[in-house]
Length: 168
Image 1: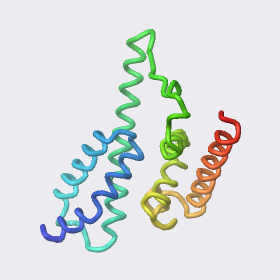
Image 2: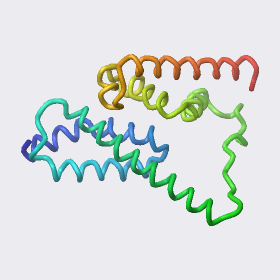
Image 3: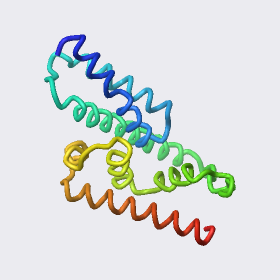
Image 4: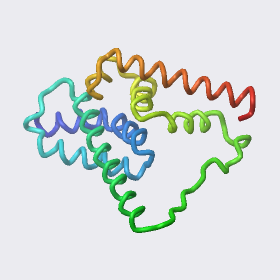
């Protein structure tokens, strides 16, 4: 792939990769860094990249970078926990739910989903990918992806209904 083709392909899908990184990392700054790292890594390998399926390559690559970042964060948290006897966590539940919009409430519920379900739901509903594409990106079967998306949607729906009906 020549320089112009590479840049055109990357520019076409960079926003998708960024949104996916934000969904995985929950941090826009880290997602920007991950997207920049992705560009750099793919740039160095651009001569070996074939035309077509670039979007899948991009999403698999950003996923791997984000997983590395998450692993690093986890190791760092464990190291800090070992050094410290008491850790104070911020409590986001202290916010008044009545002042939050429904969109923010839904985002918060989605953030609390298990990683597999959250990732599958994001790729399907936010990025509009087909189940076979998601399966290839996440290294799961298509059936497993369908189940994960269905469960994620059902959990968010049920939790929203509970909050609306019961105020919980």
